Amino acid sequence: MGREQPTQSQSQMSYTVEQLVAVNPYNPDILPDLENYVNEQVSSQTYSLEANLCLLRLYQFEPERMSTQIVARILIKALMAMPAPDFSLCLFLIPERVQMDEQFKTLIVLSHYLETAKFRQFWDEAAKNRHILDVVPGFEQAIQRYAVNVLSLTYQKVPRTVIAEATNIEGVSLDKFIEHHVATSGWVVTKGQGKGQLVSLPSNEFNHPDLKRSTADSIPLEHITRIFPVLG
Image (tube, rainbow, N blue to C red; front, side, top):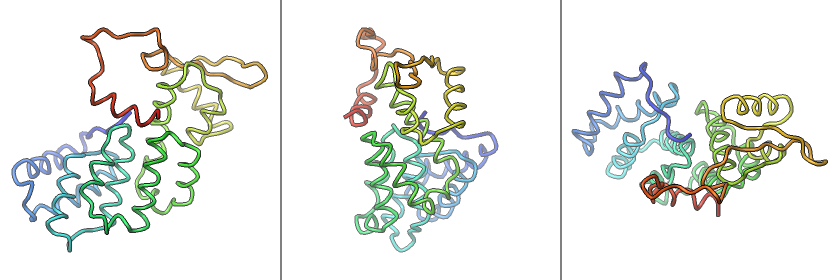
């Protein structure tokens, strides 16, 4: 869950772009390379927060060269990286006047729904804005992984209906989704009393109060602060 990793097929371009970012992060001449790299991230389903932040900073110095299409793609990729705080980091670098564009208003609303785990509202809003989101492959799957992550931090046992709402999957597709996690994630399916299936999720220090980590094995504070807004 979280940020996607570069693939070998992208390694040469990744190396070149990362070198440009490291050596000349404020050189406007690298702006076209960074824009091309955003499109490469979309097509190859990879992700580089550092390169995208560098591009947004350059747009601040070269506002007339800003591509709203590229900015939208950066924000969508940042949403896909949740629970990492990438969306907020990117949004901080985007001028308020640009944020008033309807597509950016929509992405901000979607971000709020995800941060507050309002998945039903998120999927309803996403369905109304497929024209914005469908340009980035893998978006739906990334959000489903995030939803599963939130459920695993919140519940010891969760009804099938809650999983369906959080992931926007139902019917046979949901059966296969649950079977996959039974095989790979340690889920256990049981029959609830008149309420259909219940799914037991693996215990962790967040969904099981009796589990405590030692101080040496504690989660870094910055990770905890990312999770609290989600569960609030």
